Image (tube, one colour):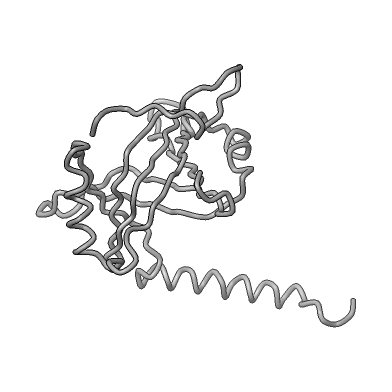
Length: 193
């Protein structure tokens, strides 16, 4: 040892400090672990009107909306508690940007919908979103997760404080020639809204 390496006790104290910092951030709601979700559908011929209104209301009016083009896969881990009282399946989503290959993949845990405030017409659920490497799909398969479905989303992100508004269109990943699916190359629209 050259004397510069931290001892085991120092490493333990640093990891405890990081855990305490994370727990404090979650208790003071700095790390958002809940999502209030309100979603809807609009027709293609009214998208421009909505985008114009959101440009005027949101924070990024001077630079315009941020665009995105993502591929998302939904995984489920089922039968966590087999027997007479089975539990709800654990839902995980893996998302990657198709327009920026340098950005990290994201693994997202979505909790079951909870009863929120009855005066607000939104769904409330626990979420956790972390950046990860490209081998996350293989990792989830090794854990026993089953791939349920895939979709591609293309659209714009608007921000207003902590509020994030996504205006996008869903596509089905298309198959190219051969037995292997090439996501992001051929996409099929799902509908006109």
